[in-house]
Image 1 (tube, rainbow, N blue to C red):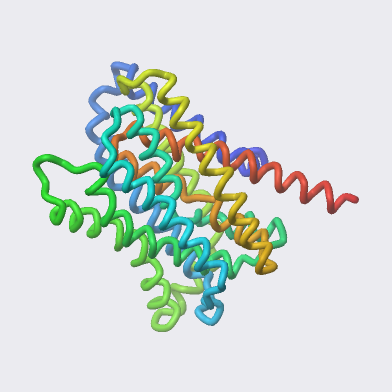
Image 2 (cartoon, helix red, strand yellow):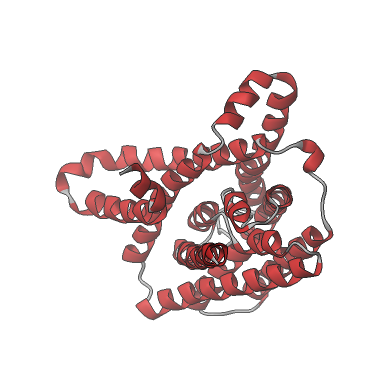
Length: 316
């Protein structure tokens, strides 16, 4: 039973999130629980993201945090590609439906590397240390770019840019970078806590599964309550597929030039979709969360294929 749950954690988490939404939305007896559930979700989601990153960064050896040349290339791809889409959204008038498509793609591009990417990278034979370094760098990029760009892309009539910038910065920057500094604090000043957290590093995967359950429910709610046509939702999902394919492709191509193909491919292609969906629902049009929501499926289909191919080659 435990082996089944471990092997199928991702689909089970997504299924639980979807069923949970429909139960809360349609079962009358659960109506009084809705305010509490909404409050719990608002508090729990950023906490889970924070905890995942803290456990991941506790595993990092500071001496291994040496940037590689391909790190610069991949960060440039993330910044430039998402920046181009942001400029289109800011300066080019377009229908709301098409804005949602571009917003979904933009979130998939700027989103940092998944905390679980190091696990997949290790299984595929790549360098988990260089991947983890890029995870930190991509989180720094997101912590700077999201507060700067999102208020311009999705402005609010009753909030100025400066207020919106500071509001998002106060939530995103600590969420992404504070875990790294706290991990360093534990390592050098409270080593007993650091050893304990390092020992339970694998818990990050299951925290990610709980967060995935929550954001799946939020995505389903966005789909059900949205006034958009189904064809628009399909186009947003296809935008997620396009960004997934392009990021894995360019990551592997650039990584090949620096003899680190697997790590670079996973670094650019495997995203922290839990964080991406949360950012889309919180700061953009919630319908755009379909993009990173579909990215969950696309990247895990590709990862499953890579692992299958790896096992097949080992059997030979």
